[in-house]
Image (tube, rainbow, N blue to C red; front, top):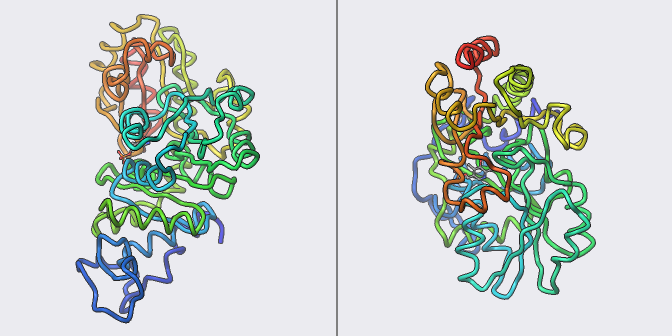
Length: 379
Ligand SMILES: *Cc1c(COP(=O)(O)O)cnc(C)c1O
């Protein structure tokens, strides 16, 4: 099956309960015992093995052509559980600079308490990675497209470097989505998503997942069974429903975001636009080779700096001023006071994050209406 068909039919083995075209919500904590072997196989919601879980695992596996998948209670549950399952006390992690805020603080504040050390690497400079390698380095962790500056690391080199040095390669593939980049098929050992964003796509649940090799997913599931971050069956149902339209949504969002990025880039009040789909993006060529679309997030700076940015947020009629991304509604935030507020001024500066930077998550509204709204507000 091709990608669009998989979105509709890949979970079918679990479906058609009593002929129902849609899998019902299995709102049952536990299931009658049927000779299961081992704790992880007893059917119970926390053990991530109800029919709603199994259906999602099948679908998510097939979307990235992985071997197995696990759905979790949030993106952060997928990230923290994967890292904790992967790394032991005494291990060392290489992580890309400029990661999602929650991941950054989990690595810097929580992992050291378990005796796990880390170094940050420049995702663009493959030659520098070797110098950070230690005998106890176990894994390398990157994002497909970073937030809010939309950088694209040398992902091909990451996979090759991990293989050469016997590291596990992990990627947060939330921004690209399986529609634009199939990280597991590409060669990453683990592909992680915040399903809160594009996979669900409707701004109404929090969820996550990890896709990868069978044995690794089995171990992560065992850890998640202890940590307890299981997705509720009703949220599983909503996520499965959202996933069905991923291809049509991303197709529209890829096109709409590119047009809006181009329109902003050509506006005299705009200083700079960050979007990998623009030919001016420093890694446009790399992004075009890696991805089949450039996604729905862009960031930009105005010539009038912080004051102009704050006025623009007030003047825009359509974009909602709030955090998160990946839903049907276009959203706008100022990362230096929201997603990246936890970083020191020094860290923000070294990332290249200015206080007037605005981030957009383009939704499913008419592209023309959004462009008109921006033009009016910028005027
Ligand atoms: C939102 C997000 C997360 C965290 O996901 P939650 O579902 O909020 O826990 C992790 N990584 C990226 C890139 C995100 O955008």
